[in-house]
Length: 338
Image (tube, rainbow, N blue to C red):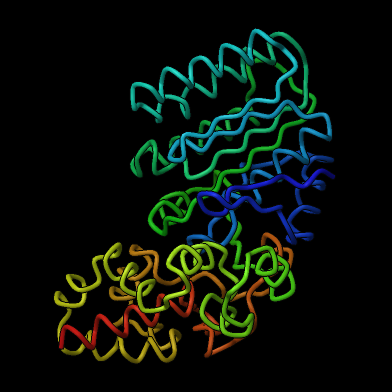
């Protein structure tokens, strides 16, 4: 299997590493297809996009006609054997991006898959990354239903089909989860050994692996941010506060809610009380915590589930901070808005 090379930060490319179990899952889907669209969610920066890029490569090597789109990053790829379909799709995407209309690519995908299957009965893979942000939350469920219809009621027959969609948005996950139109599967940050392989690809000087692991919990996105900010933890925390507007958020909280939030910084499972659920929902919407980690059964997860419980990394039994840096950003915002 060819390992794809990825842009980690501007000026630094790395090779895809680890996620062996996740790649095996892709191979299994390639054998039997996906009965429902697989919608993958997890912490921002946990490596979903890198895995999807590698998944597209794996499926292409397995003889699949692959359509890959990441509208927000303006990335579109088609490994398609019908030249007219491939050229038309890429030209459509080029024009849509030039007109700042990335959402059109997501919707047009249905037509180009139909055109491909009209020409030949094939194995088709659709890989869509953060597509719900491009089309808008209110259309997320409708889009997934359209993908399911492609599986269940195709206009032209196919040999096999694999559909994988990824999202970081807690809100889109909740919207899709209200229906039985997809298999929702969580992905966690990288495991310790795989993350160390990634860490070793970064040039020296750099902090010790133990320090980086404690801060990021295996999140490649936070590792990239630390690297870009010359390993300044304080600057990364400030960037989280700014991007999430945490000062404004904490100022909207009542005294009791601020107390609850401070408790959650130490143990996110304390949010699991009836009166605290609205606060937990706000944290999910801000992509600060993940609340669907109750069961650690490997077959329920993409790749490996998180540790059973790890207070240092902000991981509870039922709920977890996306990384230690996220909880420290909340702690700092609470302190500075007292």
